[in-house]
Image (cartoon, rainbow, N blue to C red):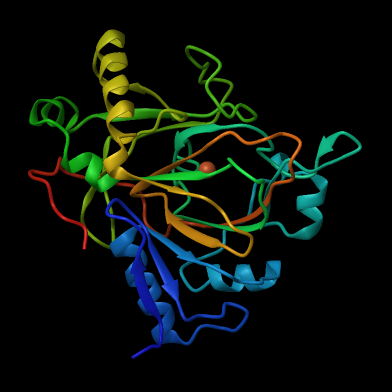
Length: 293
Ligand SMILES: [Fe+2]
């Protein structure tokens, strides 16, 4: 038994864990309980934490291997702090952002699907937040998969999609990307989660460029449908950050987006990620709508 309390955030996705102080190491039972809650709810929030980078990294390490960043994409400030850190911030020194992804909104995406082995988890810790905006939206990709019309499931059931990303753009600015220039990978449209066995829709507006083995017109039509579908309010939770919030999300079965916020207000969050110990498994199109407990 542990002393933690689980409080679901909304019907769509997410759970708040109460009764933990993440400055201290988690005992194995508590870590296991949080991990299971994460599988059940996809996004785990803990509020009112006061964490150093080392404490955040230690919390992350309960759930997998902490990922080391490609240092070519990290700023000097990030490199000096840790080879695992991404600082999501609009704070600038001498006119240059000290971190990554500084300004503006971001379309729905999962983190790094353009690699063969995308990141399993992302843990974001809020230090400074603006007075309004800069919220993170999370969408449940199991529910998106389960509620697709049967006709669409049939059309995309065994297909793969091309994921590609142009670093530096937070929203798509090109109609199509040159795959010789940008990191990219082909993954199944339905992805089987290795822990839960459930199928999730594994596409997103920011990262997914094309569905393979259909005409360009059909690919565009299908992707437009899927992007609109996964953004439906019934699958989405919008998180308004408070300093001291730490959220862990599962990139295998959720996508996230960011709302715009005032450029002249300070926003700073620390990101640590986890590698995936499994390859990407192909999933079956879900037969019927299941409920997320
Ligand atoms: Fe992201």
